[in-house]
Length: 407
Image 1 (tube, rainbow, N blue to C red):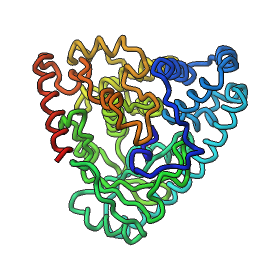
Image 2: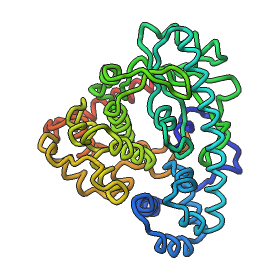
Image 3: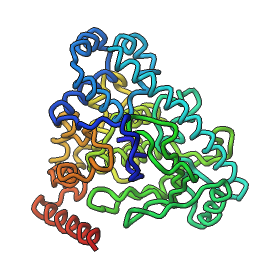
Image 4: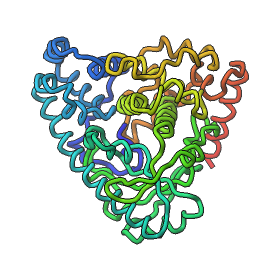
């Protein structure tokens, strides 16, 4: 889902919201189909297939493209220069609108990122932009190729008060954390705190700055062994982002952060194909052999699901530029290796099904999607712990979390 949709209980303009959820089987079919478009040239197949789609299927495809953040890619990537113009007119027009909106949104976010980095530097704060703030500003890249929900910035804990002051000085206001274990401070400017459209990317949706002093995702069931803070700082180098002073993560640290973030979202059934593409590009661009890079990273069990599934999904697009994990799989739980080699690349792999409005996420089926004790999830969370024991620990953790929410 577009992450900004999770941050507000505001209701969007009803004209921009499609009321029907995508049925499960259709969602899986569309995720696999659209994912294959990114991986390899299937022009004739796609043109023939989409021409036969009825209105409900076109509506569902639009929703899945939005949920997986792919409209800007379909509009801008040279690989789709002949494919996208051949899509049905309604879908083509919607993709063009999404690209226009995303371009405006990214330009605004980049202006806000430059302003934040300038203000932090003036306060003597060492700041490291993370994730999309790095991916969308790399030299030679297409800054408008992917959507961005927010701006992530890492600072040292000793600089937190100064960093907060710098953002307040720019007109931002700190938001009260909705999570019982927040991983960052969230800052928004007044008037930019409500979702105006759930239909893909919109420049007026919230553009928060998330200020971190640690990078820890708190993986599924609140497993806490995914801290990347020291790894990010240890390889950081001085540089600039959008012409402003910044510390830049190493290629390996960027890849580790993207992969663990992707695995975390897969565990919660929130995975997005655009995340997988980010991981694939970071792996392909990493200095040295990507397989050796993976071996040197912390938390390999948490990196593995995203890296293995990405290598399967985008084998055609990236080929041998993606890491070969075979020599490292002996270190992984056997059940996790079997699952990653065979699971269909759809919702069963943790990719999201198009539920991205607050009401969608609170239904019983959506909660079950997030917390069902599937064998692969237990393997990620608890390693090679015997399944009955891992299952028991998971049930206890979920029960504790539920009790705390009810208090």
